Each structure stands twice: as C-alpha cells, then as structure tokens.
Image (cartoon, rainbow, N blue to C red):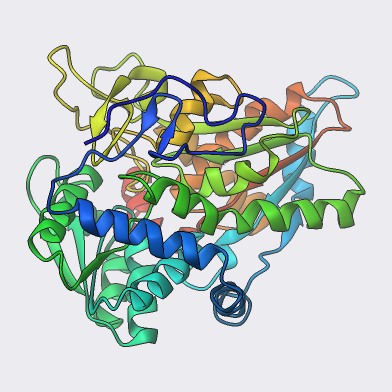
Amino acid sequence: MSSPKTRTPNPNSFATGPDERGYFGMFGGRFVAETLMPLILDLEGHYTRAKSDPAFQAQLADLNANYAGRPSPLYFAERMTEHCRKSASEGFGAKIYFKRDELNHTGSHKINNCLGQILLALRMGKTRIIAETGAGQHGVAVATVCAKFDLPCEIYMGATDVERQKPNVFRMHLLGAKINAVTSGAGTLKDAMNEALRDWVTNVKDTYYIIGTAAGPHPYPAMVRDFQSVIGRELRQQMMAAEGRLPDTLVACIGGGSNAIGLFHPFLDDRTVKIFGVEAGGHGLGVENGHAASMNGGRPGVLHGNRTYLLQDGDGQILEGHSISAGLDYPGVGPEHAWLHDTKRVTYVSSTDKEALAAFQLCTKLEGIIPALEPAHALAYVTKLAPTLPDTDLLVMNLCGRGDKDIFAVADHLGMKI
C-alpha cells in the first residue's frame, strides 16, 4: 500500500499525471491486497508497453472505427438551443452541441474502454473476465467484447440495479454473460464492485478485471481515462471543422467519471475552456444519504483501491447514496476528478432526480433523442447554464448513453403503464 503525496503531477499542466505511484496530488494510489499487487504491477507494465506499441494502437483504432462506430457525431441541438435562448436575456443563450457517444455500439461510451482493456487481457494471457456494472451499460459492453473474443465473463450487478435495468440484464444474458446479483448493502454499484474485487483476489491467476470507470487502484484511473479520451480528441477536430475554433464550455455527468474525464482531459490545458461535471443530486444535497454527489457532499477517504472524495458518515463509514440513475449512485468519484475539483480546474455541480427526469423528457420531445438518465443530469444543468452564457458561447455536452435502458424506470417514476 502506498501513502499519498501532496504534490501535483505537473504544476504547469492539468493534462499530465498521475505521478509514478499513481497519485493526482493527494488522490489515487494503490490500496490493494498483497495478492493483487503483482497483478497490478504486471498490468501497469503491459499497459505502458501497449501505449507505445504501434500494433496495439492500430488494432484499437480499427476496432473503434469498424466495430464501435467511431467517431461519434457532433450534433448541433438546434431546438434545445432555441429553448434555452427563450429564457435568456438578449445576446445570451449558448449554442448547444451534443457529442453523441450514445450512438456507439452497445449504446454508450463504455465500449471505448472495454475494447482497450480486452486487448490488454489477451496480451496478458488471461482466460476469464469479470466486471462490475450499475446501469448495465458497462456490463453490456464487457459481455459484448467477451463474445467477440470468445472469453467467458461474469458480471457483478447489485440486485436493486438488476431490477431497475432489466433491458440491459437481458442483453447481457443474450451475449452469454453470467450475472451475479449482489444483495449486500443497498444492492447497487458500490456493492457490485466490492464483490468483483473479492472475486479478483480469489482468482487472480487467470482472471482480468475490466473496471468500468476511471477509479480503482493505479493504473486503472489513468488507463480508463486514456481509452475514453478518444471522445475529447475527436471533439477537438470536429469543433474546429464545424466552428473553426475550440468549444468554450464542456459539460458531462459524473458518477465514477469515465465519460467526463474522456471529454475533459484533452482540453484541461486549454485554460479558456470552462468545464463542468454534474453529479447526481438525488433528492437534494441537504437530504441525508439522499444523493450521490461525493464532491459536493463528501470528504477524502479510501475505497476500492484509491483515495478520493467519498460520501461518509461521521464515523467514516461509506454511505449508500441515492440517485434515480443506476450509473451515478456510486458514493465516490475517480481520483483525477477529485484533484481537478481541489485545483478548481473543473467546476462540479449537481442535478436532482426531478431535474434529470424533466431533462430526459425535454430532450426526447425537442430533439427526438432519448437520453439515458445519466446524461440527463448533465442536460438538466445545461438548461440552467446555457441561458447565462453569451450567444457566441459554444457549449458541448457529452450525451454518453441512450435511454432505452431507462424507459421502464422512467415510466414508473412518471406513473405511466407500459
């Protein structure tokens, strides 16, 4: 186990790091069982070599293009822009774009990371894959790449999430995955990750753990970020082609934070670009254990192999948290986000369940796009932020998941029968 450092990875750059021990300032590190440390170090070595291997990068680029369907489109949300400008003062109301990662194969950004990690698993000679999932999008992406590469996989999913994400559960079954419903705790993402880590410690010799978010022990936060940064790299090129300049404002939802860091990271050293991460505000930040906004309502601690902001009670026990979104109710956040919060490079805000539900319906009616409940949180904040920005402001929101997985849950909340 390594102890935290307080220095930043590079005081002149937000886009470098972590340091050699996996820290972003005081956040990150490798807090794992001794039996896992050799595997973690082996994984780090394989990933370091893969990053500079043209054959690995070419294979990943081919899969991204011809299997996942990248690049994902940059879409001018004209009616959403008009809607926000109606409530703005003259000369205000940002021009809103969606980075449409929900159009990727499997319906979210999760496939970006899973393709990279499955290639690493094959390089390492692993013959069994495990993963955790909350909303089910990561589980579907893992099951998908395992089907493609003929590897068995087991998915750990909280029993609560199994019930509220039935479409994705069925997709995972169809793809050949074994699903383990976790009943401990609140039966949500935190509990699923606990069980996956227990499995990994027990079966370390032949098993590779595809972590779905930019959290966990080093090198996972940096590795997941790197695989997801294809989002931001594409956006730079697309915005230059569409507008002749970089965006002024970026917005993405935050659970563990993989879609957000993928969008943010290529822009961190562009100091004129304003960046907002939107946490799950649940029933409200003032409601005890009624939200999942760890940076707006938590404090630093250690969970799942890294030091980061966590929702905790007065005794340091991890709270369950709450969100209408199964993908955002994790009681922590990736360590790079924690560092970006403390350095104030990124502004972290929140949207409530009710606001996300309203944005879900608004986007569907105005743009003919059904968003997942996760990016609906980001969109809810966009509807508040855009009217305060000049009409020359180019705002991009990452639409990181499609909403077909959420239609039954939304119908229940709206009191509708399907």
